[in-house]
Length: 388
Length: 69
Image 1 (cartoon, each protein chain N blue to C red):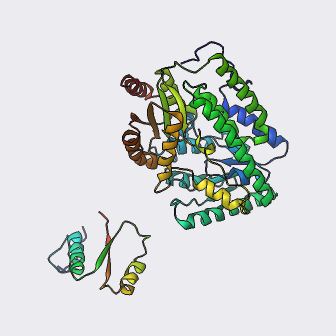
Image 2: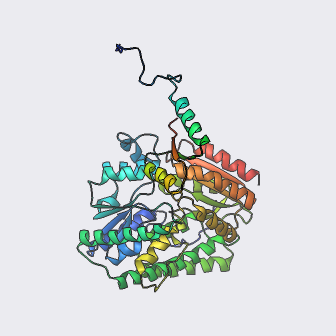
Image 3: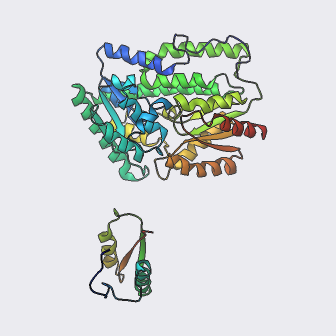
């Protein structure tokens, strides 16, 4: 599905249009060449402010390609989540450039599969596994997570032979908040009726925003906002004015699993909200500033992330309410990766919530990174849109 | 095939080959005497604490149900 006029200027006009990972890689390589250490990350719970405060650049490690899964299955069980198999396959085949240039890896105990996979890759790079509290509403959770963040700071300082100050961490908190406001301004354009953005434009900026500093992003965002304003002035929008507006929620989406976004578009829908860790989730809340205890402030904010590994994960339903009110979707599509038990089980609650509270049609798609189910998914999405 | 040279089982009651039934009978009997029953799923549950709470609360006893099936 195209824009309603031809030859629309992309939001980021460089040689990496449609290649979010390559753009990020070039950014990280430039920083590394300037002497900055690289911290590989796998998850939205990695506290970026601490990584930046120690003078490192974060690198999102490869986890979204089908091509590395066969190699991984020589070691890992086949009935494991494709994200974990892909991550491991990238490492044992030495094909993830982000991992290759990482000087250390930050990991978290989010799910059982990842936790055990981290044990297998721990010999490749210096690694720090953060014990993530999974009952976020317990009063000890905040203190325990703050301890883990402080220990991560110590690990990074020792590994990179550098140091961070509380003032530096506070500066990074403020920088994150500025970045998140810019991202939310972008999301507001996606939320317009009709939407001014293609999903891949939001995805590309979100990808870059995960690794780049706020200062480095300013010019890119200013140019992007000018481009969007010009679109709005000319009446440019994405898809047809009556296209079904889709909120996609669930597991992280990237690389080969973006087939679902593409199918939604090809079926005539417009993805207006990407409620996942590779979409809007990392940018939706701000960190409290000037508390005098920046580590605690960071801990509080990250514990608010509504991942299905948390129990009870009531925040996800609260955030879903806000997202539905803001983006006004016509339908909710949940994407669950095979064997992601927590998102899969939680999908029952999401379905009931979407249907009963918001009276929205809901479709759950269980998939992996292969293309074997593309036509099956297409049939289901088309049937869903036909029923609207 | 290995066979024991004695015929008498280690627990010589009416519930041979029915360990679940024997366990349930035990739980029900103690429960009728006033004990509270706490269900468990996992070996990480601190049984000592559960039993000790029974003493402190003045209850006859606390029991642990191990749901293994």
